[in-house]
Length: 334
Ligand SMILES: NC(=O)c1ccc[n+]([C@@H]2O[C@H](COP(=O)([O-])OP(=O)(O)OC[C@H]3O[C@@H](n4cnc5c(N)ncnc54)[C@H](OP(=O)(O)O)[C@@H]3O)[C@@H](O)[C@H]2O)c1
Image (cartoon, rainbow, N blue to C red; front, side):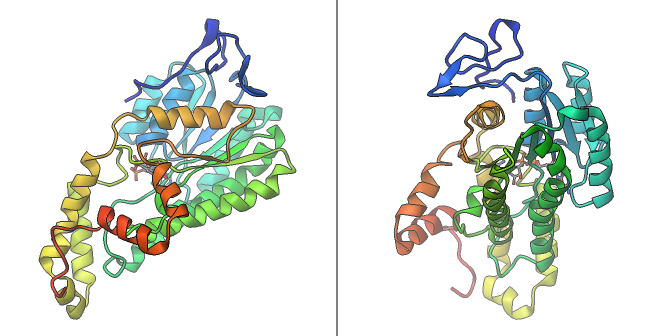
């Protein structure tokens, strides 16, 4: 999973360089890559996927990594402890919807970082797990997505901000293309990510006078656990079906509702298995002296929002409906 990204550790120095052999040398106009040494970062949601890869990537590069995990005995958490190339990676129990865990993590990280503070917070933890029409998605999913993807990240940010202000560091939130473009099938996930992006835009401006930089990442599709698996989809399918009123059930039909799972299979198979572009973007966001406010790593991650912003609604609706709504099967009463 970690192959394919572009890391140069120049002359053994703890320093990233893009297109230059000189440690800390210029990498763009007036841009340098800051040394990694003594810079600490907290990443949420490191049990699996992009957060897990990022924790290992930054650890290998010499950063001090606090890897927040939903469950400290999960296979991903155990693997992180084993794979750590240094004593500088620490796995921290951190369910971002649990205030007492957030406070405990804060106290621990404060005691470990001392006067240096925390350089980076990566709000990565997130949930999706199912893609379906807004009318079918049970209300508890809307609540859960908002609770984890938005409220949880805001709570972690608020609690850790004093440590980030101390170092004039960075807050990076992993949002989604679905937070900018209203994509069919992603009503609750998209709304939660739109909220996260809007919040990040607000604090980007408020915190600039404190010397803190706030960055949003909108990745393309990467193969991780975010879409769930067959067992999970069957569970959600049963939950959806058991909660629908008879007239909605009749309107959509069992065949259409079941077909939603095949859509998830297709989405999973068309996602990229190489997180390199994501890791490169995070590296730049964390360590460039001139990070960008937005990054779009992954295939079409930049192109689709660009098209959405610059085309009339009828045209973008037509294109995104074609891409994101099943064409081979329609609801029963259509
Ligand atoms: N992969 C993509 O294509 C893609 C695209 C756009 C945006 N993103 C975003 O990227 C981020 C990382 O997702 P991923 O793709 O790497 O998926 P992932 O493999 O599912 O990783 C998300 C991690 O967050 C954890 N998590 C869930 N609820 C949590 C909570 N309350 N507190 C702490 N951790 C929690 C999950 O644990 P469990 O697995 O145990 O639930 C999981 O380890 C997410 O914010 C996602 O929305 C991903």
